[in-house]
Length: 253
Image (cartoon, rainbow, N blue to C red; front, side, top):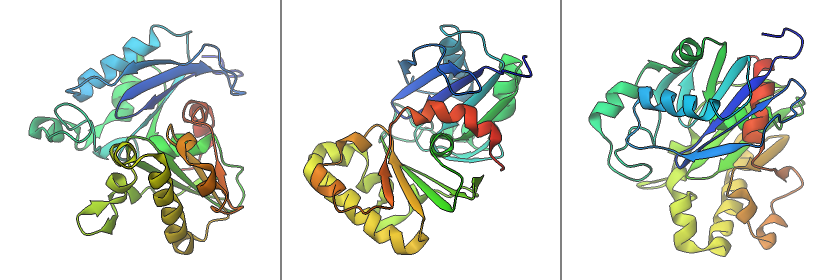
């Protein structure tokens, strides 16, 4: 591995697709990002095989960053919402997959498979690493299959918690309320109103200095909703999910 210019394989893992590229230490892409559908049913072993499939289509790398959905603590999967299901998001939970994923040391498994140093974080945390400026309390929300969430204080990554699982009303979590399934059901205009309401509800909870909203569905927020979100809210590109793979190595966990 080059100590001066390490090349990072950065992989952004979602409920519907796995995306990857290789970047240098300046965050320059050395290949166009590639994507494959997330395969189901998805055991940890098959997940690593899918990462290996992505890597073979990309330039050589010295280290790996993986961002994946769920509660990831010190590289270990405490809970992941999609990969424990039989056929993907919103399908039934498969007990054998739930058992296989719970407590799985993904960081060590990735490092061992590729024989490279690896970092495994929640996908919103990697996304945020590519966005933050390191000043004040910065909150990151990603909108995709569900809701991703991360907090940074003075550039340091705060302990993760799953805002997506928090109830917005009886029997409904944020993950369901603003997820892709509801966006399709409601249409972009009504869904955008929910994003505005969510921001208004969360602002007095966190008193952030800046809120970043990213993920694939951030571009679907309607202009009339964007106008009233506030100057402390920034809509960002989904490419941060891969770009953050480089800066994640500088985070203090």
